[in-house]
Image (tube, rainbow, N blue to C red):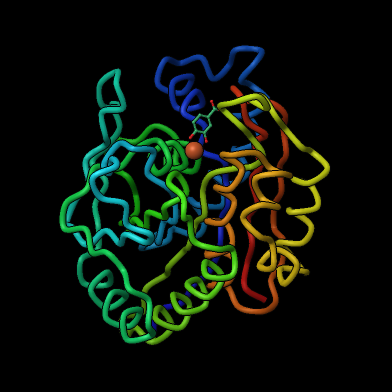
Length: 279
Ligand code: DHB
Ligand code: FE
């Protein structure tokens, strides 16, 4: 059967992608951020996962106001990097896993999650920047990726609790898949940041560090967070942290923390990164 062998959380700041693409990763400003991902690069080389279920959010790149799916699962054979206004990132095409994606779609809809199925979708920095951080420069990504795009940009966004339930159902669905795949699940976005309005520039290290602690062994506190609490404490874009809960829930009740990093700021954002193993 397929196994979920690790869960990885990371911020997905676009300026990290730009620094990476322009070879500025050794600059004084960026070096501490990129150095912190050396650990996970080695981890990924050792673990050699087959597939990543990558929970992220689209930032009005593939989906604008015309269609706003709450949970959109990527079913395609391949996904192109999105043009976010300055051309597509020069990173490899993202190869999907349509067979596992079809299994997930079937199991999750049977489990009462009314997914949107995306047979075509470009993927933006929310997905490609984490791939660059985990795998570095590559001619081809060494894993297949099933994108799961969550609406965090247009109210009403799904609740933390609903994301938790979806993660649990994803974990069950993967463990019921007959092929012996090594599957990872990632949650990207966050941590605290606000890009707009009166509180633009907000960063809340106290909240973020408590979130990291609770993600490991008190996730019930996090699934109870309301939208308002997330907005107030983590800022308008800090609500991206709900994607981390999908990842965490898929790992089961107990996890071992393998790696953690927290850094303020990168662009406008508190960068958080955590690697967890189901215990
Ligand atoms: C920034 C962070 C994000 O998560 C994002 O999607 C866009 C911008 C930033 O810090 O600039
Ligand atoms: Fe974002």
